[in-house]
Image (cartoon, rainbow, N blue to C red; front, side, top):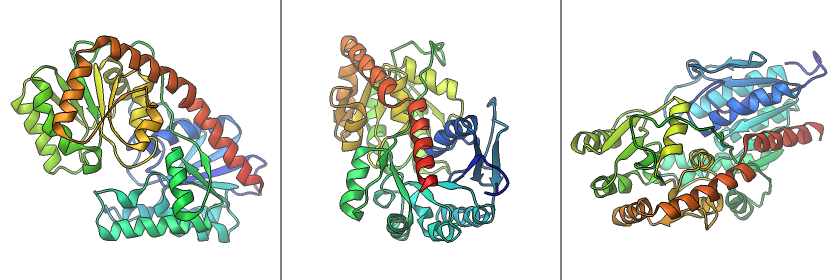
Length: 373
């Protein structure tokens, strides 16, 4: 991917588990963005980790180059180590521009700048405020954010509120590019459930996603409505044990663990009666956007980010208290007219503001602008 070997524009994407990967929001975005850029005459290289990519029933675009570098596979060092080795490889290959995901990779931006490689950095959420990280990890993310503010050529914020935070905290501006959602056609009702008759939750099992409070609310909801839980911690532990116990002790509760099947996830959102979204830290959440694109009626934890994405009239907002969650979910399940209204609002909003076509075009425009500077 040398600058001298081709007249085509070239981009390296760093900071994800690779292409194609189904791990999280960054990976979802890359699965869409990388082929889009290739289709628009970019030479695209996506850096990842050994074993980080899987492609079950996924049409891999052969025009996208995948490169796996080595790193230290631990919770605290994986992002830093893989970011370092992928940056070293990108320095050697010298793409026209690099798209870097996550401020933890801010430490390596000076390496890319030293080789004349401009960078566009998606800052993600406010990682140093996440409960899942200890003091040292929070310091690493906060320091990485400061490095990103200093060394990045362009910043991407996936929510307006994230941009406001960076303007206040780091005196830096950037561009707003959210996540997108796939708008599916009619899908069959999944898992022998009844359409619009069950409550759905989809989340990684971490405290800031209101997992404890939702699990406490599940018995109160399951007395009246089936509950389907999608997610896991990724490494076992107390949350997974609680989900298992809820499913075993309540006939109305189903725990599916982590689901890689996109079609099943889309069907679950499309046919849910209520989708509970408990994410509290971060910007535009990919799961929320996808739920909206499926027309799900949403009960969301009351945060500035969730209100921004849904709009004040696009969902029911609730405090992180088990009784309040159960009462709000049950009330909405008992009100099909309001559910239909909310479904229409969020589906229209997703199509207008959170389409993958718009997201991909915005990324390409910013990458090209920075490349030309």
